[in-house]
Image (cartoon, rainbow, N blue to C red; front, top):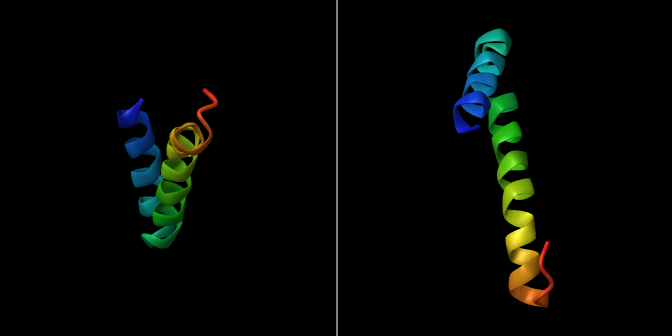
Length: 47
């Protein structure tokens, strides 16, 4: 899974010639993956 995400981010960097889009995508991916953990930590409700 991580290889696929890295490959897609690298492809976006190569196509756009900039790291802006992959950086935003990486941050979004991290927020989506971390969100349920934070929700559980504060509410005790499993995601």
